[in-house]
Length: 554
Image (tube, rainbow, N blue to C red):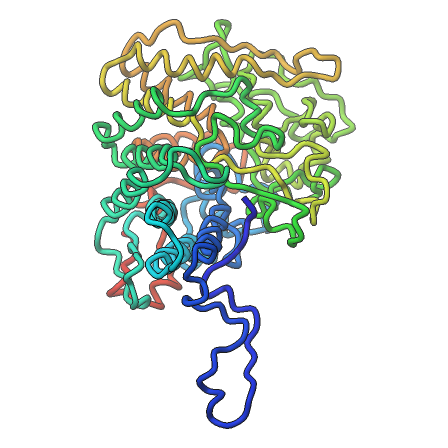
């Protein structure tokens, strides 16, 4: 689906006033696309595409602070990643990483503007649909369902970030009076249920939502409320009757050549060489390339944490070290020049590590062997690793407007996520065998796909096996949550998972206690339970509406 940045108020391309005398005041300006002009099937679809286009988080004037991947809020704010780069560049992100961010930093306002622009575009479409003159009843139902799905998605993004946020539908006219005094979960659920009831079972285009997409997102919304009774039948329906499967190779979820595959439920479409300026090419992550001589050449942000790398260690049976993974670090090259000798870690590793993290001595897709420091902006600040998971292979970005434009789609929701959410419910139901089988599907697939050297030999000692059993509910819960971290690492979910599990303070303070011995800027950082689970509501928005209308998070 071609990505167009359209909305009613953004379709103004030219304003020309002609004529003399007072009659010119009554003329419609040329080039202004008004609701009457757009109230057709083609116009509705154009505005819907404009609403879809903001799924990538780019198009409202902002990029990395509003990215679809939530790399700042979902990954850097967790134990998965550091801000990266160097100490001075985008220091506002360091305040988020240290849990001391203030409401006035630009990042929060830019994310807020972007998600509510998405809401506004969805509402624009709904208002147009009501006046469209050439749409059948079935076409109207489908278009309304798509718009309400998108409105729910953008509100869900806001809800995850700030919890108490305004809900804005197509009937709102006073945009300076949007209180956040009502929990909006029921409104999000109602939009998604309408989408479930009215969307077609198959996608009209690969980037659009289907009935199955809406079911999956609705199930996730229920999971965020710990409403397992509501989530269970949706997840079971998707697993038993839906069109999705795990693809054979883990890395096929992150390759340009295998986009929109059978595992993809909601996929944000990216493109390069489309006549734009590169902003359609995963521009929200354009800072997250290796530095210096590395591909992209800038800017060294979003560096995986040592804690995350350590989580991929496995024992002699090919199982994760659930309790002791962080006792000893995976060997790295911190402090070494790229010209210094270095032998990578030889212990057992889950093969998903080297599809997720760039580390010295291991092939970086087809860009050659990762050289270490030459691709790192400041090792002493943010460690020796680079982001790798969504990185496009050499040759996949032909015609790109920038070396940092990336045509690789962002997989916002995939079938592995569904299986792992269902495993969570199985654990809480006491169905440990069911949870075991679901987790082992994920692990079985992970074993199929390893990074290799040019001669075809494995690039590291990859040892991964299925769990033989879950001996207790506590063990099963820990194993399921650990598997979720490994499978979805750096995809923007980790922080929000820790919050919904109510373990953020415990997990992140344990993480900080050890990481601050490696990353000096984390010294003194701590996560405060009851405060840091949500981000500050942007002060700029409170100033616009008034503190008596839009109230700050406690």
